[in-house]
Amino acid sequence: MQDKELYQQLLGLKQPWRVSEVEVDFEVHKVDLWVEWPKEEQASCPECKKQHIIYDHRGERQWRHLDTMQFQTILHCRIPRVKCLEHGVKSIEVPWAGKKSQFTALFERLAIDVLLGCQNQTKAMELLKLSWYEVHHIQEKAVQRGLERRGKAKVKHLGIDEKSFLKGHRYATVVSDLDQSRVLDVAKDRKEESLSGIINKMPEEQRAKIAAVAMDMWEPYMNAVRALLPEADIVHDKFHISKHLSEAVDKVRKTENRALLKAGAEDLKGTKYLWLTNPGKWTKEQKGLFKELQDKGLKVGRAWAIKEMFSDLWGYRYEKVARNFFRKWYWWATHSRLKPIANVSKMIKRHLENILTYLKHRITNAVAEGLNSKIQQIKSAARGFRNFKNYRTAILFYCGKLDMYPQKTL
Ligand SMILES: [Zn+2]
View 1 (tube, helix red, strand yellow):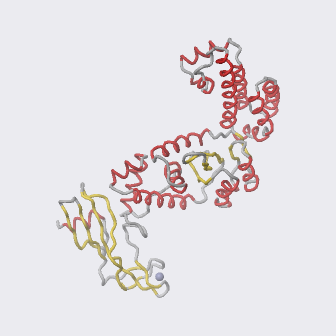
View 2: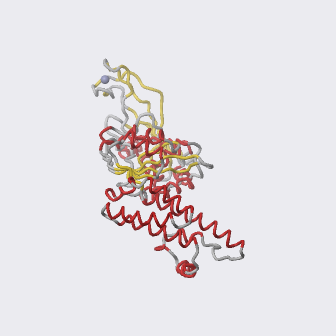
View 3: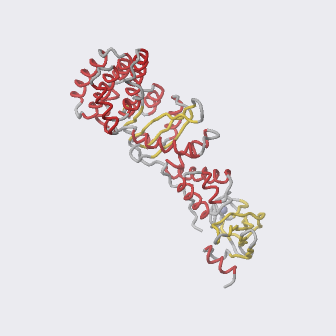
């Protein structure tokens, strides 16, 4: 079998496309293939698919294809143009690549798989022998295709979270689909416009089906949801509430530790994570330490108990019982003589109506939190991002569960 014929079959090129030339460079491990569409064959207009004779050819272009063995393989072609009465002079479609790509669709597919597989752009660049810009370009196009295809898919429960990005305190708003644990979009900042920009981009019929939105007690987000999703319930979920309570417990510990140290007592030294870790995840040492501290009547122990007790609220099924429970808890928290705890409990009370919505929807941003740790990994693998656009692209690429492959199969 001749080289040309072999490649014609390996590529799966259909007539009248043909391989006109094959060049193998053994020194640099490279195969160059020239593909052509014979002048005498008619071709179809890419717009209306009507057949026309070939008008002319464009200058030669090249596409990186899958390697042949360890040989980097480049496809070359002068794409023919047809002159359609209706659409003018148009380049015909080629079966191996989408418009404007410098890679064949199969290569792009491989690159997407490699990127997803190693979750690390630098490693992917090495494996694929591509530059940062090339990899980034493939990623960006993949995300764009995925977003276009996602269209009006139904989303019932949204999760809204803020995320710091870059160094310092720049924020991003991450909107996710809690039922399918995927990120839907990312916007700059954590302002009302950040969220409303994302919601406004959603098709009307998709918005109409959103039943509830889980978020922190953050006014700008609440305003955006009230204005644009008036039918949806806001749920200040257990993940966020417990974060606020944990912060209060930590404040109590810090103040108390300082006072104890001044008096020469080291009871609380090195106990920070004991109070912040879920008791279900305590190590044997932590359990022992807790027992020891429990009997000392420490303030942080009281703060911790109040925080732990609050989590009972999430177990109730009926609103009335939950309200009774909250009344008791609130009295305890506000009479604890622990200022940080009293402050958080007041904030919780102000938002109680949007906390009790949990009993109806049972959603929590814990899912989004799983995505957050994935985002964190992406951030450290990329060693930071040059700008917001790249950050958004990477998050959607890895956490968007998008259908990103190019369609062409050759
Ligand atoms: Zn046409």
